[in-house]
Amino acid sequence: MKLLLLSSPVVQLDFDRIARVPNLGLASLAAHVDDLCTVHVADIHGLKNHREYVKKIVNGYDLVGLTAMSFQYQEALALAKIAKLSGAETVFGGYHPTLAAEEIGKSGDAALIDFIVRGEGEATFRELVQAKLAGKSPRGILGLSYHEGEGIGKGMVHNPPRPLLKVEEIRMPKRDARLLTRGFYSFDVPIDCVETSRGCTQGCKFCSINLMYGRRFRRFSIERVIEDILDAEAHGAGSIFFPDDNITLDPKRLERLCQAIIDANLTHLRYKTQASASGIASSKQLVDKMGEAGFDGVFLGVESINKRNLEFLGKGKMSNDAEKAVQNLQDNNIIDSTGLIGGNHDDDEEDLGLHANLRTRHLSEEEVQFITWQMNARYYDYEWLRYNKVKRLYPRWFASEIRRLAPFYARRKLELALGRRTARDFFQEDLASGELCKGVT
Image 1 (cartoon, rainbow, N blue to C red):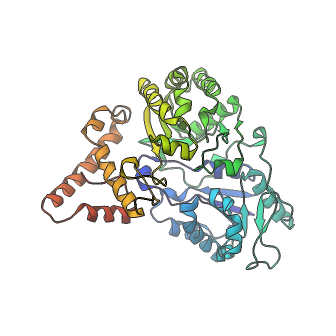
Image 2: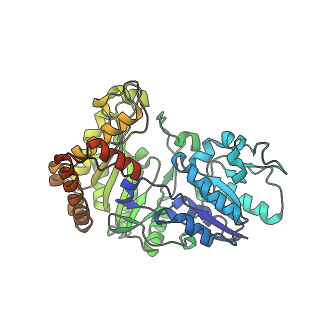
């Protein structure tokens, strides 16, 4: 039996210029079935023509797995069609298929989907493969949705959910299963992912993590994390991204991990993570230790500087923490980037962040996006150019971006000055390309 696991090719192009990261979840799934069958992982989000690549390699595989968030789901269906035409069965997993399994199972999409692995997938996926190899029914496999008999068109059967796994039973990711090993980077350094924990106990209203894992926080042993970092480095990584749902939920543990990195002489690698502003603000000692361990980038979930919105989102006093968190990172020469949520019900032009995809009570969808598009260019001004740390930590990457963007903005300024184009023209151009961080000054 041969399995092919495909990452989603749909990405945010603006982010993709800064970092392109291989899919850790698929490598973890591969680790849980590689003793049963042949399994390959294809991180196709770096390819220019991913559909042609999939058509070229898919023949001969018995089962093709696809993962998708909501904005990636439609392309996953297109790839599933390619897989079905090759004679393979398909299995979907990830946030969107998990949370929309009932709806998907009743829709026409189900004709392209043989199985849905809901929630944490390692054990469910392994049991599905075992059942296929033994010629048994998938009935009774917890966390699985499937068609029963000739049930396509009649709705999928949804087995009961699977309890969360014990982290000590989760195998190390199988990086050797990857078919594509080049083209993954953070700035200009090869990157890989290592997880140190799963889940979050907080209940932010906008977040789907609780629906996947419940309000639970499970920690991998620090020894396992160090072993995984070493494996990622052995596979070519010079930078490590920790994709934990909330790595700073236990600040003392993160501090111990940083010390373990130091003790293992792994500070030559460059570490990045996503973190809550409250966690980073809670301890300057923690952030000092992160800087000593080799962290050079943190994505902060600030969400909003508007206290009304923070209350609505369930983020409490986050606005009181954001400034302190940024200062702690700045003091340690760590690149800080912030996530802001635009499009809350009562937002007007003064409240918006840098990206938006929802209308508010005061602004249409296009007005929200147009305003945030304009904000991008205003944010990346000469003051930003003067103080930002990227140019010091990644000078070659920064220089290449300046060479790319300087003539681009010069042309736009000239066309505006001559009256050949309007700001709205450029907005529609960027909207069509998917690169919405350009704007026009």
